[in-house]
Image (cartoon, rainbow, N blue to C red):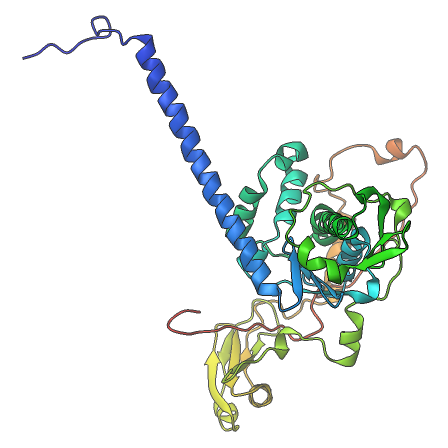
Length: 403
């Protein structure tokens, strides 16, 4: 039997030995973190290369994922947001083109591919700064790390007024300004003049002293090889030519002439189309439906009964909608059949007459606070569904057991 040392009898480890262990731990920890960040940086670089390869064709040159300039002077901007009628993509194009000093007629804006390489890092950075109230700390986080997080989250979204105030201000204006600087630097070498003697306007770098100028298109290939400034100086608003101007919306012509592509326009070989009729009242359930009339229509392949809806699957949209229209499904009302605008207004009036506040807005003496005689007015709006104009549509691809 051997004695086990107690706290009083255990030999003390020399401090130097402890220090070695502690130092080894710290060095090892730093090495692990460093290796992780290095790996993330490599992954970020690879994602950027993937994005560049995805958007550039012959005679086109990519700048910071979101922008490419063609040797024909066409400037294409890739937006990570969906313009669903609010005009945000035109606004984003204005913000980038303004800082780039681009010729507006040569600017195009298209949707970025729904791929990890196009994750919206700027949105993530701005959103974190906004919700934490600590922009200095968030801005100190390496771009590669934020890019990694954004890719893991598949961060492409539209909503919350984030397009212009986040993506536009945090990313697009800086990309435009940084690309402009790269074009100027390239032109300075070509013309053998100081950078400070060059100006830009309408997609050209201009040397006024010698009356020479170069198009962005002829500078793009070399400029795209330069590292872009992460924090370029942006224009003073007094210098704006495109921003704060009412320009023609870039999305309107395609919507007018019918060339705009909506979700319902998407098609691939052998695609099947399903149309669906849901219970007309919220909470309603499907009780019965005779599927024979739909199945009798040429092109209809299947009728699917759901808990609160019925769907028809066919070889095209017309047989699918025709099959659905041939059905006469029966639904319950979910106990909500009597709900109407009038009944909702009546419920509002009853609550108002009852006069019991819910307390959510706080407490206090309104009249004393206003210091004047209150003016009373009643406002009511009907119940409205915030729905899109096009039929709601999505496309799924099922192959090899994967959807």
